[in-house]
View 1 (tube, rainbow, N blue to C red):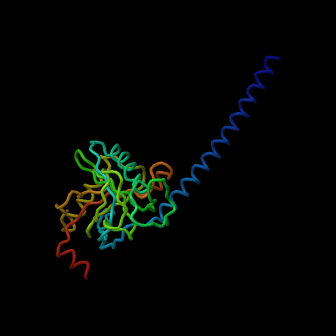
View 2: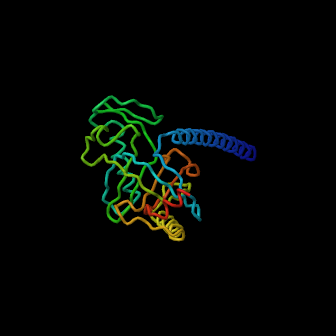
View 3: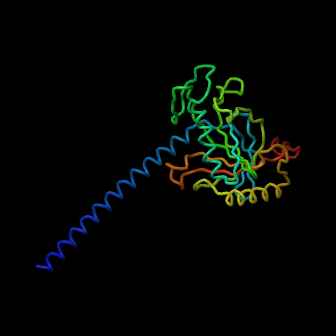
Length: 246
């Protein structure tokens, strides 16, 4: 009798285990499906225009960017991840409706939200992070049809809209979760080595010498599908323009 009870209990536990395994498999498949959907949606978002000048050793790409407009906030903290989270919410609030509309705006991108106190703006990519000691600047690239003069006015004083002038970046692309400060520094040093080996100079002007770009959300999209980039500004020297012309 006791033996039969033990056998029956083992069978029940085995059945429960199989059910749990099936449920976990279904949930995993659903999670992956949602993640792939988010990845595909992000891949069709509007992005800044750039031309690839040439490829440098170590997977570094030299790009010339056309001007574009950004909405930006600055967060005072020594942690880049903390700044990214806080800054993202602040600038996303502006994009999602916390603005004073000057004209009716058409919603075209697949990722968008609306609130009652403003106009919803289409999401674009990438999210720009400019890390530095003490202050990190987080910015969203606005649609090409907006300029600082025509974009809706932010309701928050912490958000500024400005134009980014044409510039050259040396960029290195990699997958994974949002990079840590250590990963950013590692990528930056690899880029600097490639830039200097090519006889070029990092730009010493401005406060955006290093940029971190994120093209996909850090929560839904699987890390192995996420696109990250670390970029370093490069001086637009005569030698570089000659090499492009040739």
